[in-house]
Amino acid sequence: MAATTDAKTGGMGKDVAVYVCLLVLAGLQFMIAYQNIDVSSMAVRMLCVAAVEGALALLFFMHLWENRGLMSFVIIFTVAVILGLQYGWPDALRLYNGVPWAH
Amino acid sequence: MSQADLTMHSHSSALSEPTFSIPAKKMAMWLFIIADSATFAGCLFAYGFTRTATPTWPRPFPGITNVAIMTFILLTSSLTMLIGVRAAHLGDKAKAFMWTMITVVLGIAFAVLHLREWMGLIDEGVTLFHNPWGTPLFGASFFCITGLHLTHVLGGVVALLAVGLRYKGGRYNADDLEITGLYWHFVDLVWMFVVPLVYLLNLAH
Image 1 (cartoon, rainbow over the protein chains, first blue to last red):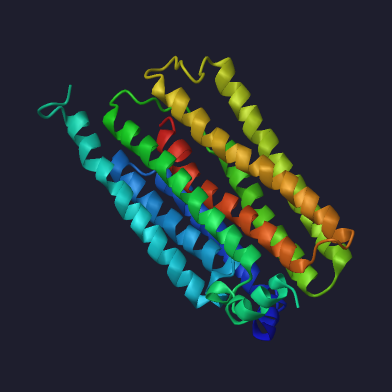
Image 2: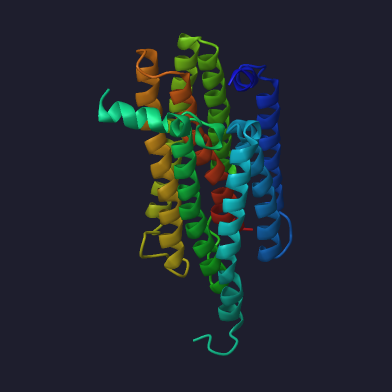
C-alpha cells in the first residue's frame, strides 16, 4: 500500500506525457480520416490507434500498471470478449457482397 | 462473543486479503467497468456490422471541428481528474475538490457541445427512425450509441459532483474519489472508440 501511495503521489510528469500522447494519437486518427483509402482499411487503422489510446488510458490513467494481477484479469477478459464479437464480420461482408442467401 | 463475532473471526483470514490485492470498492468498480465495456463493445460491433452490410450508408459530417473540440475536452477532463485524485492522495482537500469541479465543468461542456450537434442533425431531419440521406439505421445507430455515451457522461458528472462534495465534507476519502475517477477515465476511453467509428468513418469527403 505504501508503494502504491508513493506511485500515486509522484510527479505529474508521467500523467502529462500520457495526456500528450493521447492527444497526438487522437490527431493521428483525424489524419487517417482524410486519407484516400477504402473504408475497411481506414477502420482497421483507426481501431489500431484507438486500441493504443485505450491501452495508455487503462495502464496509466486508470493505474492498471501498478496492479499486475488485475491487469492480467482485465486483459484476458477483454481479449475474450473482443474475439467473441468477431463472428459478425464475415456475415456482414456476405450480405454486402450479395453471395447466396443474402436476402 | 456473538455468533456474528465468531463468524467474523473464523473468516477474518479470508476477508483480510482483498482479491487481486485491491480493495473491494475498487474491485466492484472494475467489474462494473468491464461489464459496461462489453455493452459498448456489443453496440459498436453491431454498428460496424450494420455499416459494413449497408452500401447506402450516409456520410453527413462536413468537418471534424466539433468532434475534435469534444475529444480535446474529454481528454483534458481525464487529466484534470488525475490531478484532483493526486491532490487528494497528498491530503490537499481544497485542490482536489477544485480539480474535481473543473472536471465536472468540462464534462458539462462536452455534453452541451454534444447536444448542440444532436440538435443540428435533428434540424436536418435525422431521427431515431428517419434519415433523409438513406437508411434509417444511421439515425438509430448514431443516436443510440452517442446517446448511451452521453448518458454515461452525465451520470459521471452527477457522480463526481456527489462524491466531490462529500469528499470536501469529510464523508468520503481519497480512495473514493479515485474510484469515481476510474469511471470517468472509462467514459473517456469509450469515446476514443466512438469517435473513429461513428464520426470519422462518416466524414463527407
